[in-house]
Length: 160
Length: 160
DNA sequence: CTAACTGCAAATTCTTTGCATTAGT
DNA sequence: ACTAATGCAAAGAATTTGCAGTTAG
Image 1 (cartoon, helix red, strand yellow):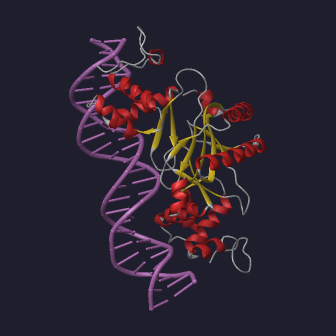
Image 2 (cartoon, each protein chain N blue to C red):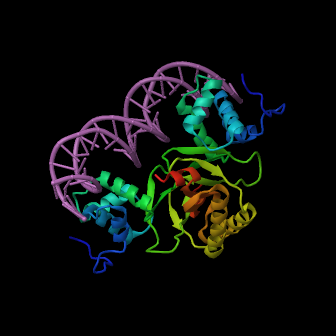
Image 3 (cartoon, rainbow over the protein chains, first blue to last red):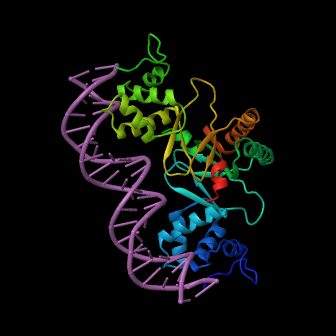
């Protein structure tokens, strides 16, 4: 029904991930991925549910959770915790390439900024650290997060 | 009753934080801080509750939560989320000095390792980034986290 | 066809809140 | 004494689970 979004003749870029894992390509999954792809930034399960609901009203919240869990397991989506009790989800950078997720979070109002300062240095350090951690602890590292917490300009002046 | 832990004649190091903020020094708070100081590493509210309970059985879980909230607000404790739906708490490094909290988390079994590779570089980069973010976005940065997620050696071989 | 997927409702789990009581200062 | 702090029970919120019906391959 919807589905008009960067699809090749043989399906979308993520189809192989599904086929390969023996997972079925269903309408809910397509819509959820579409929503994630369109609005990219740290959505909560409920955010996703609401947007998905507009496109395809039959999809339940449970399916959102189950699909997100699958997508995270497959590595297509990253799950975050900003400390407000609800998880956020973000599609991994388009296709290949390591994705980086750097957030600046206001602990008072919950505002989240995606920053991009010193990314190159950061990425270099992360890579190095990842390699060393993998070697030393035998971990297979899948992902990482870097987050700064504090008070945004507004909350800082209002001084609650 | 308990309280035999690095206290000067005029009270523990954290007393001034309490007095200064107009907060009372109560038994639950003392015990909770003792537990945090003794076992340092990423405890959940329930972990803390259980240990506190052994020392002083009357303290309720609610008080644990309320005290932790206060301690976080005061900056004495750092709150973490490792993605398993329960928050973890850690006492900030002893006294002064910026504390750094670096974790390597197995997404399968939940094991958490505190790593210490490339800390100097990391700290330097963090400092620089913090300064820049404060300048650019007007944030007053209070804290940060760096976490790596992946499969630990065991979970990786068992290949679930 | 048949096993994976879905939706609903109920259940869990973690955390917060209301309120009467207790205890620092 | 005056209030902050506590404990209990109940409420809330996010996420998970059981199960019968649905659908992709």
